[in-house]
Structures are given as C-alpha cells and as structure tokens.
Length: 432
Image (cartoon, rainbow, N blue to C red; front, side, top):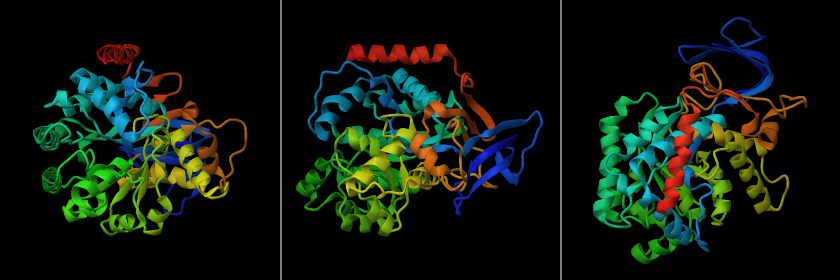
C-alpha cells in the first residue's frame, strides 16, 4: 500500500515532521518515505490529514471494560479500599466468556482510538487454567497487536500465585504459537500481594522464557507501608535484594518511588509505564518522571484500563506535570506523544518494529482529521496532543492494511459482537 500524508509526524530519532509525502509499505513493512503524492488503486489518501505512528498503550487492563457504568455501591476513600471493594470483587466474578468478550470489546475501542499495540494485565483467578487463551482469542478477533499476561497474586494463597505463573508459562510455551499478533509475558500484581518465594519463582520463569515481568510498583502507599513492615525496607530495595531486577522489568506507576529508588531502577534498566489518567482517578499522586528522565530511563504511557482514548491520557500527562510545577510552560507537550508512540514501544521491547514511521518499521499508522486550521511542521505534535481525540481518527492502519475506518468500524467485527460484549457486562453487574 501507499499512504499519502499531508503532514507526517514520524517520531524518528530526529523527530522529523514532513509535509506532502507518501509512505510505501510492502509486505507490512515500510520501505520508503518519499516527497510528493502518489495516485493509484492501492493509495490511501490522507493528503488533507495528519498522519502519526500507531499509538502504543503500554499498560492496560482490558477486563476493566465491563465495569464502565456499573451501578456499584462502593465508595472507596483510598487506593487500597478501591482494590478490595471494587477490583478484587470484579475479578473474582469473571468468567471465561467475560475474559474473551472484554478483550474483544477493548481491542475494538483501542483500534477506534488509533491504538495499534498494547500491553495488558488480566486478573480473574476463577478462570484458571485457560484464561489467557480466552483473552488472546478475544484480541485475535481483531487485527490489533497485543502483549498479554495473567497477574500473579498470592493475596488468597501461594497456590493461587503458582497457578498464575503456570498460566503464563502455558500460554508462552504452547498456546502463543496459535496467534499471529498476540504474545505473552509475566506479571506480578504487586510486591504486597505476593511473597518472596513467588517473586523468585516468577523471575526464574521469566528468565527461562526470555520475557519481561510487569509489576504495579508503588502505585499506592500501601505498597510502601507493607514492604517496610514485611522486609524492613521500601519496595525497590526489597525487590532488588530478592533478585527481581535480574529479569527485564516493566514497572507500572512508580508514583511513590523516591529519588534513590529511581536511581536503583535506572541502574537495572527498568522501563516505566506511566499512567497519569489513572493516577488522577485513583488519587494516588504524580510520578517523578523528571528524575526518571534525568536518569535516562525509558518512559511509556498507558491508560491502566480507564479510558481507551490515549489522547485523553496524553493530555492528562500534560496537565498534571504542568500543575505539579505550577507552571503553564513546565512540561513539553510533545513529550506526551513521544511517550505514547516510540516510548511505549521501547517499554514493551518492540521499538525495532513499531513506534515510529521510517523504513524498516511495520506499517502502523493513524490518520487524523484535525479540522480547518493549518498544520505547521513545527507545531504539529503539539497540535495533536492538545486538540486530537478518538473522534478525529479517520483510519487505523496495521501492517499497511486499513483495519478501522471512521463510519465503517473495525474490519471483521460486527454489531452483534459488540452487543454480546454489552450483554456480558450486564450479566456481570447482576453477579456483583
């Protein structure tokens, strides 16, 4: 395919923005970016639009979709209460079909929002074994790329934690081969919901399979307080002592990580999945991304299951970091787009193939109709972050194939599929 782009935001190393160009994709791979427009039957014409790389959501929970709009009576006043009173009740109530349908529905919403790749963390202990096969089946009903995992937790028992590790092993070592664009990794829910033995078993499995481990790290103060009670030190040094960072680690949140802890994370090349929109909603705080950047850490951005519109997540990042500094110029807005593209791709270990528009990468694009105002190369990334939304996405392209078009929906998914998602959500509400 050939894609004509009026304005092309490449997110390559030079962060080039080019005007009036065409991108050539052969066998799913970008082979050239050339000046001028082309014509022909295989040309996708976005000459009046802005083209950006496919957005990458490096931390989400697709199983959160059914709870949107649910008539819950819980009124948590802390992050820990939200876990106990809402989320742990939800994941205990999940069925195998909920796992599949929530993944299908979330994948559709992400594609409609310009997300072409994601990293998910699923929790549903009563769907073991086989949960990840159900999740992957739902994802694979769409063309999106996905990394999936089961959240290992010993909150109920060590046996349940071991079942979570085994679920990830089963998917990675056997089931994953059945899916073209879905891969597995490992996950520890948190340090405070696991034991040292479970941590070490997860590290051993991840190293054996050469896969990263994702962990919710210091999202809430409960993680810090429990670690001090149990191990006499904060979570990062406690995990370091356990050998956790011998594996490749994706640390989600790091809201309460101290400067010393961030230095330890940087020393171990830990990547960070920043979740600003979620951190606002859970009222947990603001991560010290400035220190992370000073230490040379890779930062990506995720929605944590709250909102599939990554443009809203980007704007949340801009808002909280300006507010933290009490300075309207205190955060470079274009950085949010970097986090949502090449940054998240690096967090997920996929930056050799996605995250930017340049030869050698996969043909993953988003085309945006930003309205009547001129789009200037110097301000295009800022315009995208400040003004774009999922409603402005006209096409989502993966491997050079248009997989979503505004007005036509996600290819391969029909209304009956989404009706089934809604019906499953209503049935879940009844069980809750």
